[in-house]
Length: 241
Length: 75
Length: 247
Image 1 (cartoon, each protein chain N blue to C red):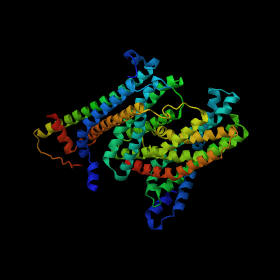
Image 2 (cartoon, rainbow over the protein chains, first blue to last red):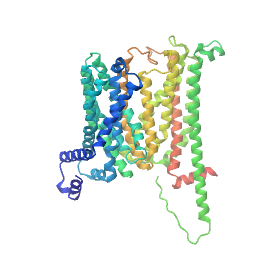
Image 3 (tube, rainbow over the protein chains, first blue to last red):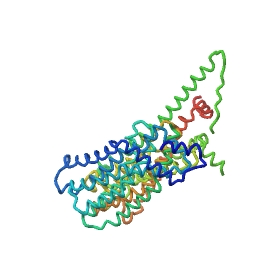
Image 4 (cartoon, chains in turn yellow, purple, orange):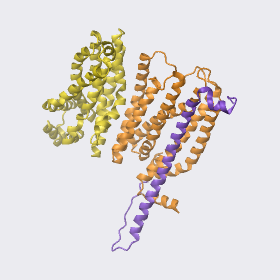
């Protein structure tokens, strides 16, 4: 994949179309990640372990877990996405691929979008697939498990997209991980509120269409704005190093 | 005057501790940031002057060759 | 037009303007603040619902008001940094962020203390207090990122991006926190929303808000001067200025 980039660099007249470049970036990120499956597994294990802490630390009572379950799952998902964000640009930054990416003729924000989506496929999507199992373990009732998965499905891409801004801003800094959490957690709060609120509403039998639509609006907003900010931040971080 | 006496003003019908602690913290913090900002500016000026003096001493000391450092103004 | 713009961006020009403005900002601001607070504490009528504890409003509202507008000012300055690369805009952001954080903390603290006699507890997850807490986190993020990047130019632009991202999020955060609040506490006692405030209450309130604005202006000028002296220490005009002060 790296060779492909160098080829386009040497002969800009045969430039690749934007869609092709996005696809190339996307597939490259997936391939590299699949080479080290342990790195993919770690956020999932973290997710499961954090969820396990709550019955142990607070109470295993069914009534408590039913009430707090959606919040526990959402917070755990949020934290494991946050943990995995450091990987989003780190490797490419270390081996210089990122500088090549910035120099591409295609608009950088689209390439960044492709990278964020790859990040979501690698971390967010597995979390969504694992959520039903954990939802049953915290005694969520039938309908709310489905709603929970739906909110995670809409919400986790937002987490990846917003997180990419923080990852780009803290690239190459000391103690980047803690700083990244500090910058990004306040921005995650609306997604968390609507994610858990929707599940709570569903468990009370209230209609959730409006809230899901709002989360969809968050996703559209993040999809259109976050890659711009992330691309700008990447340029700044690369000019710094 | 909304209060009959100075004692009533301080007591505020039992709400005195809340009101006065708020005003106390407000003035302490605002005063602290003002004081600290003033001190910081004085410190920076003193630091710059010290650095200038030391470079002047170095310039006036007898030397085999003299260099003039050109400093383009950024205004 | 462009010349004025360039002048505005010049640290030297700003330094002079700030020096002439600062005494006015400070003393008029302190006088207004003192008048507003003195009037509010001693002469404004008692609130028929909350008694005298409402007198905290004369510092709570100015602090909260300013805390929010400082963040918006920082966002405008951040935009200027990114678009025109104006040095002074970044000097403003760096100088003002800690002041904004302190004002946010003061708004939170006075809100919590006010809550004790009104709600019976120090802290309630009320929509306003919670959004203020998140605003405080945003301030901390800005300060931390600015401190973490050593290179002046990239620090300026990174902080500008972060502040802009934050300001886009503030309305979303506010809206979602309000929605969350109605979900969990259907009937909250609103602190400051009164059907109608008599002029004996809102005039001193207005005075103290304006006074705090002016005092903030003084603090901003002072801290910007310090920041400029630090950054431009090698330029001729700073050396001349320091020499002139020394004699």
